[in-house]
Length: 298
Image (cartoon, rainbow, N blue to C red; front, top):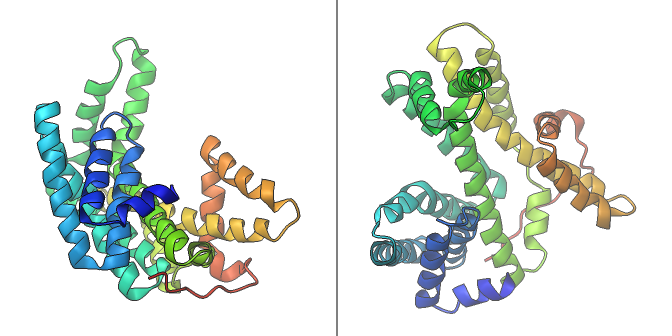
């Protein structure tokens, strides 16, 4: 990974090649999109918003041309710019100028919330729309009863699930880009920033209010609140993960307990609710005794 980060920082051509080729590769291997986004983040974090935008635009053009000649399709490049590269460029500027990872994470979450609100504002009936899409995607061999029941449940929350997934991808790309920047120019800086990840009391209070609205029966407002709550829970999962990482790293056998923590979170999704609850009660419990100050990784 360090060699890839060093290659990206060699110059504009190298950064464009990395971002565009990784974008094309992600069509076959979707997780690679995080690495592609991290390429844009790294350039923006280190060299500024203008340079990041220049690389973004040129990489999008290169990816579009390669997609057209190799796949006969260039539209994916437009989708990449709008859904992945522009948002990560924006929050990378926030992180570079504000030097607070927590603020950049909050901005990413707010972008996800805006996406949910926009979907509910412009779609006549989001639940019905998602139901039609899910019916078309359902395997023909799947049991009818189980499939219909699953579609009925998922269609009510798909807007929030898609927005939350986008925020997760965005934050993973930002974290990877910041980690690259740290290992090249400020070893250990990202670890300190991540372990100090927190949120303001007002943000936590807003989360609790929206979750409370989700349990009311006010039609479209409660449906929107439910989907927004999914995005906000993602925010507190990251904070909870930072808290548990800090706590476990101070224990004996931390070399093993910290990796196990993340493996459990990935393999047992139900544990994420407990992690989010820890993140939500961060200000009250104060499990992290040592405070970390954000560092300048420029």
